[in-house]
Image (cartoon, rainbow, N blue to C red):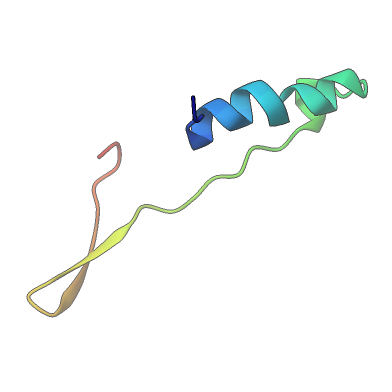
Length: 50
């Protein structure tokens, strides 16, 4: 069974820093900007949470 990207991270990647003794205050989570759609030739930012 193939894992989704989120499953891969949760099961295989996230545990590694903790095994090395890192705590949550040392781990920075990546934050991405909202997406941009082009509507009628003009860029439009997506609403948050959508």
